Length: 154
Image 1 (spheres, helix red, strand yellow):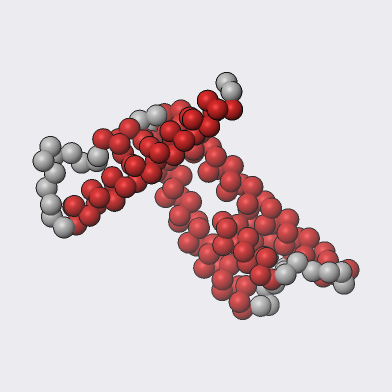
Image 2 (spheres, helix red, strand yellow):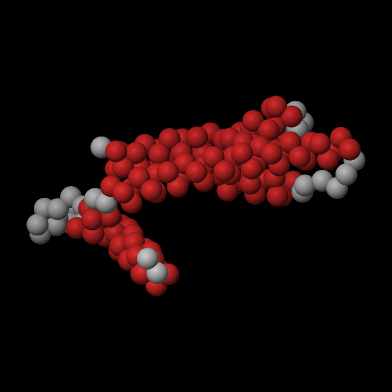
C-alpha cells in the first residue's frame, strides 16, 4: 500500500465520519422539532454506514483504550516526577502543565499520582479540580467505551 492509497483511505473515513455526524445532528434536530422523516428512518444512511464497518469500529475502540492508558500512565509518572523534583529542590513541573494533563484525559492517573505520591493533596485547587475531572472522565470513559464496544463486538 502506498502513502497515497493510505491517505485516500483516511480521507474517505474522515469524510464518512463528518457526513455521518452531520446527518445524526440533523436527525436529532428533526426529532426534537417533531419533523417526520419521509421514509421513517431512525438513523440516516451515512450514520448506519459509519457503524457497519466492524474492523474500523474495533480499531477505534482499541485506539481509544490505548489513548486512555497512555495519557493516564503519563500523567501518573509526571506527578511522581514532580514529587521527586520537589524533594530534591529541583526545577518543578508547572501546576498548569499538571492540570492540562488532567483535562486531556489523565484525571485517573492524576488521582492515583496524588494519592500514591501524596503530592498536591494540600492544594484545594488540585483536590477539587482533579476529583471533579476524575468523576466526569470515569463516566465519559464508561459511556464511550460501552458505546464503541457495542458497535465493535455485537
